Length: 107
Image (cartoon, rainbow, N blue to C red; front, side, top):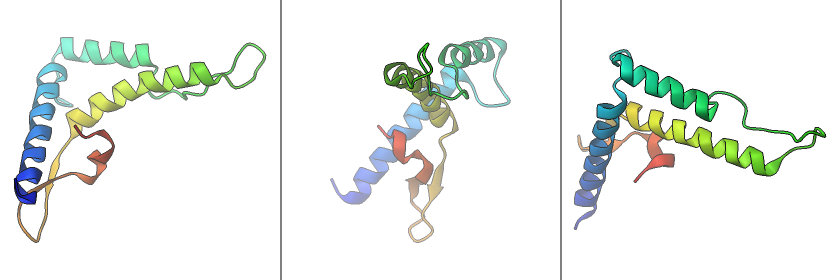
């Protein structure tokens, strides 16, 4: 498989994943009531948007709890990355490329 074919296959996989996430979670501004309810519930459960840093009852940094909380928040980041994924076009070839902001959550 050529580099161009591999790139095209990669972009198609990203499109398929984005479409699957959109079918479950809906598009921003176009979600139905159930989709909004699920996303808000997941945001609360993962404490999305809060700081992940946790301290124990003595005030010291709690590495285990911080890592756990950061992992939960990564789930929401992944959902929003997939929902909001867009492809860009390389001006030199006209072929679709994955958006640069997507590099942390591919495949």
